[in-house]
Image (tube, rainbow, N blue to C red; front, side, top):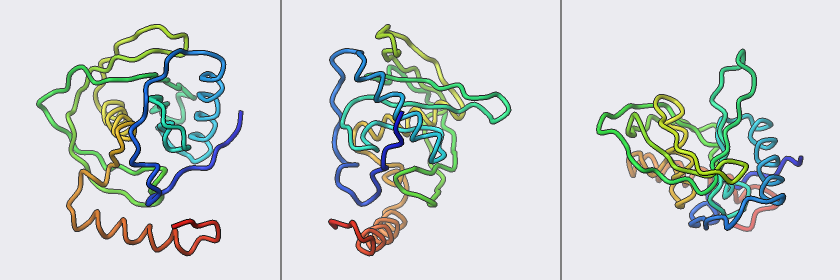
Length: 174
């Protein structure tokens, strides 16, 4: 397992639309292992493949509390089948936008169909933090960031801040 570098705002890679995986094989399992290692190292509770520069419809999540131990969940080619009219608000953050948090309103429950690590189709009914995390990570697969759900004024401030930070990094191509 390898910890991969995270793609950070304002990198345009984060705005790419991710493509479905054709099959679940050894390469996908290695990618999942790397993603989990990267997510836990960050530390975070969710990671989409695009956040490590791989434009594929794959995400990993672990919303277990520390005392419960690790409980990773893998979602390959996930799609939301249904979402509730009821809404909930969570303070969200993102590994690709470090140290910035904002309240985001989303449907409080979702039904998601996906393939598991063995390539078997599964359906998950999620609420609470898992529902929020699934929607946040699924947004990544479509080139959407959580800051797209906040006011334009706040979003513009965040983008300017991270663009300035990116320009000051020695490895910057911005």
